[in-house]
Image (cartoon, one colour):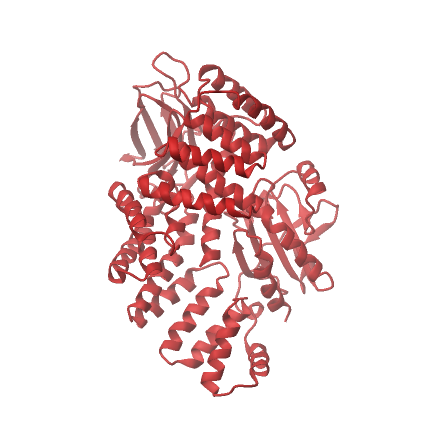
Length: 605
């Protein structure tokens, strides 16, 4: 479960970062699929928004319900909102008031099972006097700036609102993606200025915290967070500081007492601010932590569900928390069934899951939690049915599903089926499967010896994944950074390991040292390792000088990522000797190579 929670966390980070990385897309009213009047709104205006489903470029259909999922910024603080559009003939329309204090809107158009990735509206807001509102230029940096002019937006924001220090973090984020060589000198210079300021507002403390993290000063960043918790316990920026610290700790693999001290601060923060956006975002990790007081989790859940009762996530996580603590299982059963109903209806799409990728990832997870709860309640038939449904919908490699299946069969004394499930889990690299197999072997065969011989024979009899029905891998013909031409059709008879990544992705970077160990381990085998990078060749050459990556590196590979349906980074796709996709793994961790190794070996059999 721990690895799964990590993967989920990664997807949320990347999804939020994706808004920033799409900078340069502006209001696409020119194609007449979407329109917004006025295009330069002021406080007190009402936005008149339309979506034309009969336009040949529209991806949503006239028979669907169409929603606007948007990020609304009041000054520099974001809030997710969603509004259902009204249908009038062929046109869907909606009105959104521009509240006083509003600074920016970023809108997407979705249905409950689709989205129009080509239709987006980004609007900076002005005050009644016609000047850009506080935060307007800051978020124009992220959503509207071309790569060369984001600094102009920074300067405009600083000129109009010198007390908006959060704009420094936005600038550093953009610079890290666009001009990494300039990042550290710029942060150092900015920090020299920020440290001289006597006013210790929440946004200034947040900027200082982010700056220290950029400079690798974990203890100083941690001390700033402690000060924010003491002085501004209810501030949005305090939650943001915690969130950025978590990402920093993961990306830099920070060890020691610092992260544990911050974890203790977080628990206090959650207890005092159960209604905060950050508490809701982290409910997914709280729900699986036995050390967190269940009362705190319940407070976060109640606050969240009172405001958004049709969001499936709070119900799912509260059910998980009851399961983790072994309490209120009948209530947990009701909660998870409600969560499953809502997610299957597509309701999670209305809460930041614009592309639908998070919904598809979580449906099997919801079913697995339902299975676990049913098992604890003694409802083995329901437990098995839910788990089988979860496995049929799961596209990733998840050996723990097979371990859970074995547990159910074993409870029914169906030892042959339990053994088969455990052998498959062992084949997929489940760490505890061998010990479970040994225990089952001794019980079933009443033998205390001969286990290793039994295991070898049993594994030889297990059908390798390469011989099971799989979809053909899309062909590609590319040139690596070192000039080698690679054509998938020419690699038949070899196991091909694909990695999709980009330099600015921390989980991608974290797994590289382990991946390098794999290439060394299999260097004399018929295995080909290829890394499709989203970055241009020049940026990759600079990065790889100090951070070697021994896969074959393919630059500018977004087209290949698209044909392989990559929705989050990093993603690994493993292709068998027959050219079929055998395994897919999403997310990154320092031990990713340990999960890949047994899968590669299986395909070499």
